[in-house]
Image 1: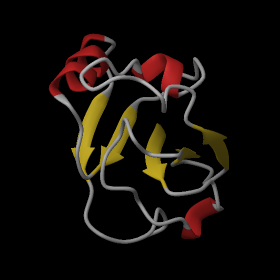
Image 2: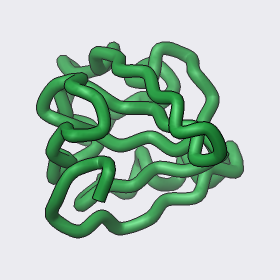
Image 3: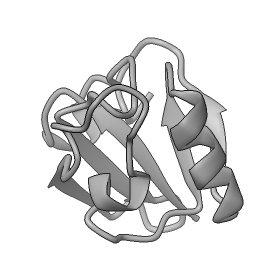
Length: 96
């Protein structure tokens, strides 16, 4: 399963999970079977309120799930329409 974590910076598995999807500066994408990860910058960080484009934010990469503290309704609906599951994060690092 490929899971995305919004983070302050793409510093690997020790990155702190960011509180909101659309305004996260970066993302860590983790393959949960192999624990191989990729850090990417948010490609949609400058969007106006309410118009987050999750696929643009992720640079077109496909994920199975998003683990995040907060997410806007528009982004949530777009992700769910693509079959992406969204999970609530707790405070901590990607590894935790």
